[in-house]
Image 1: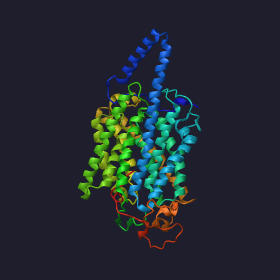
Image 2: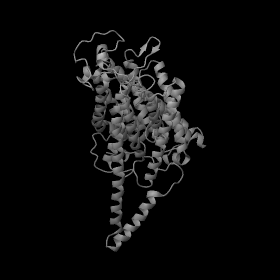
Image 3: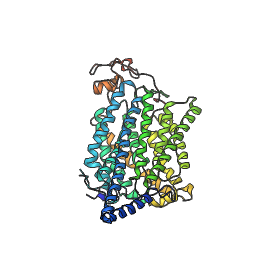
Image 4: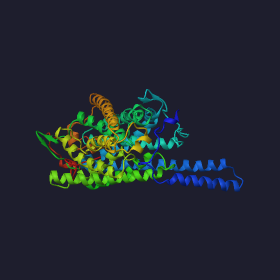
Length: 502
């Protein structure tokens, strides 16, 4: 097992030129004090240096674990957000999917995904070892715990997988969901990660994606796009030339889900420093600022655009706007200054409104806006690095150039575009084949009567709100196309038409 490839092989750095010496100076002083103290009490300098190294390892390891826990907690955010944006009759189904993509993802990531992502590179395309890893040592590159790295990266993999569930909500077979989750977590996503962070060809070119706007979020979005195209729209969503809003049932859940996601993003972005020692604590704090500013700007601009365009301050689009800002800054969170983060988030907030509208016009039914939030804004955030990355950050990352608007020319922007297009092509082709095979084998979509009755009782035998009347499992449902079932418990809400998010 080649542990050197377990983490990104790029050097660590500060966002701008040189900031306060911070932890590096403190550790230097502490080393001297420990050495002096040890000599005075008969202990060697080597023994004190080993003790200090152990402390540094503990700090970096616990940072990995805490950040991974925060990213994992985003699963709760995804679950609540998606549950809020679907109808009552499909609430238990969407929650069940979120539970199992994390559970299946853990096993599949350990078995093959981690090896494909971070194993010994086979021509820069895929990892070829580190399957079923023992995870008992330290990485050669950064000297941090292998187990902590695995845990952190699993949380990322689970995030990519759960994005797909929102785009295919309310009409997809549960068995089909389990099948594509395994392939996304085990093959499609890990290969992309190998390209960018695991020693693959994109990383060698200097492609810059600090925490995964494209490497994580867009992978889930493009897989969701292909699934949404092949499964088709929900019954009653598009009738002739009319686009009908299908409101979610609980905007309270959706709003709580968004805030949990925002909270978890402080593990996603600052956690991607891969440690706290050597000045990285200051960098993590700086990244947290960029993350906050971009999210806030995204929400503000989204609600403003929605008000101007539709005459209403749409809550669903506002939630989407905050998430759009978060996705947009994820690629550049460690490369740009705060003023640039504000601009990146603001543009992401505007883009998500028009993107949701666009996909509705082309009849791609995305109940929670996942494709727009994670795909459209993921692309924008990745390209924005080629516009706003500082010279010091790009040089430390090993990129061939820095941002166009920062005086760096077009080279960095070109490399970002190459990365975006390569990943778009890989995911759409592989996910398209995957969903095509599922559709023509085990089946991708539930029967019409099950969709109208609701996936909760039909797929799981229970509703999320048992006090509401539901249709019992196995009971025939006689309805005409486009007719809604009152017994399914569909309630008013928001986010089903213009809004939604993931």
